[in-house]
Length: 211
Image 1 (spheres, rainbow, N blue to C red):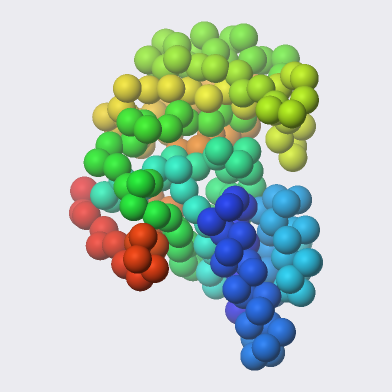
Image 2 (tube, rainbow, N blue to C red):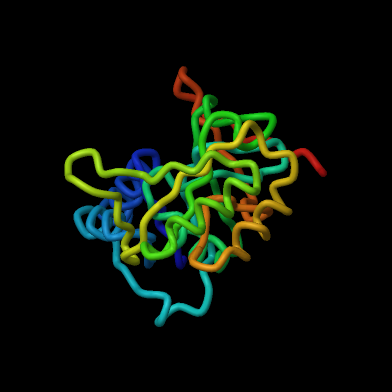
């Protein structure tokens, strides 16, 4: 199988488990990482890798999420890899989201901001455009260094805080239309499956609510 490998603390466990099966069961897979961190972790666990140049499509991709709505719309991007994650997820026949119950929400934008990846020289006009859309945009700063967080693409991140998002599809298009924006963390109608890890160790397959 050709598998998209997500980024973040939750998917790190899945990558580790896949690597163990490759080693112990000779599982035949090739992975496409969504970030440098995912690539390094996959290599550490012995997962064969290929770039999208070598793969026309993917059978499966898995990743975490910051928020999951009842219709499987998502907010992603706390790991600053959402642009690459969206490219990989969109190429997969199945996109499986791995979360704990705290990530399930009735409406997107109630717990986490929407990360917006922006050209550094365009930060100010993009901030103004996001404010007109009802957001409170905040430039994400590095925790252990001076200055903003820089993505793998060399862009900066604006975290757009909303008091709930009534129409994620419309907001998706509105943000994408802002000059200087590369992409953002709204994943609309991309996820096909959501697996919820419960505190007792069991896994629940979420049922999608129809719009």
